[in-house]
Length: 292
Length: 297
Image (tube, rainbow over all chains, first blue to last red; front, top):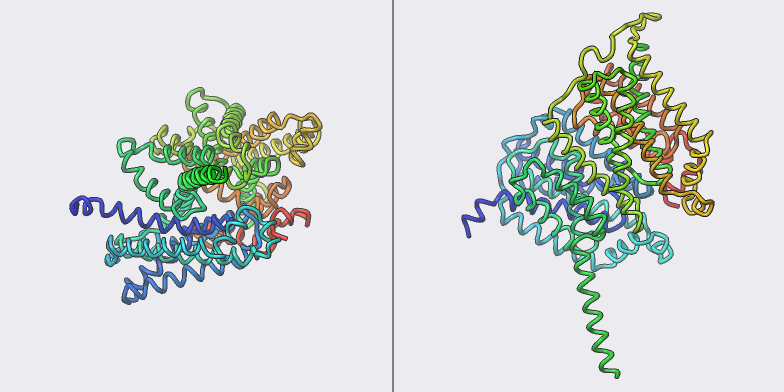
């Protein structure tokens, strides 16, 4: 068991990193915000964490805290102007943000070491550390989704007009969603910097936007299980398809295409709603028997 | 020097405009974002390139083949990625996702087919003739590109505003439901729109391929990202906006590369997109009517 764990340690850490990214993407999509900014926030967190340890020589826990704080701040700052835009335009603006951050990390060579990326970051986070963070965040996510904020997110996603008529402020909740997304992605980026020895700008480009989106679309964007299922599936898939290494992207693209077409609510949400429906059917059958 | 850079900017910008026009056409009619438009562009360029390599086709034929190939790919894209989605609602979100998926598939197929090589047009595809005019160095190719773009745009505008087909397209763009009542078949219109848009992308692909003399599987992505800036600046769905801001972005980019640095060009262009969305999200050339589609009340 231990050898198995050791051999696949990087893969597990990648899966856990992907779960955090998926959470960051999930929380905005759940609120009906079409933000693609996760990659940008993750880059902010990652670079902050790496610079604090390698260039300033400060301890990693401080790096984690500052990175999460900066991620949160980035999310909030972006949210204030973007909360008034609608779907497609939010997507475009956040995509532009990803490009701007990428451009800065590539060209601000004094601070970010340019295209080479920052290397020689001491590894301070292991598998257990990752697991703890993901467990805590999963709990927080499910707590949020059962709170009034989570319910408000659901209403806004389904129909903004209804949300407004119920007295739910769309802008305020979009702000909350953006902020949470930034915080989670900032933390995820920082953890990634502390567990992978080096970071490069191109990790946080369009590819990460696509993978974060794919995980949530495949998994589902209502239940907390959605991003987890999506992240695990999309991390494991390349390992299963190792023989078809060249066609990995084709499979990923086709999967995205097929899942949005035939399973528009994602694997987890479709399963959960099927189970719920069945349980309701059984319960109502029982109730009928009793009344007769 | 400044005039020379502006001229170069106009040439590149007119091709950006052509590319963005196809993108904005689909958005204007179907209200969806086709994120696979960059792949259509790339495949159009490849079709043009292979027609030169294999058949030694002359320039006008290369353009035609590039355009046809782009149109064909775009129609297939509509059939595979967008049509199945129309059954269930929330097209805005799902069409973006499915076109990202289709884009990945097309990209990696092209990567496999070309073995990740950067390919070039043969040396004598287009004769290099340079004119000197008022101190400017103008290549024949640059003049031809501007000519091709102008011709294509005039043709498109004629089609959209002076023919019965164009009237049908505009009717569907206004309201698909109403146009159905008037006996217009939206399915047929969608075919036309996707073909036109793909053809514009294909022609733009051939032109960019010849100007920069490189054709490779990733060439679509930077152009698609530029097209976002172009259409947001011009107002999503607006045809004159796409053309004018295409030129503008081309000029701004060339000037940034010439006077600041090549690396900064991206940052400048995307900051511009961000700024426009903050200050005037309906685009610089759009009236107040579009406000409700862009922002919340």
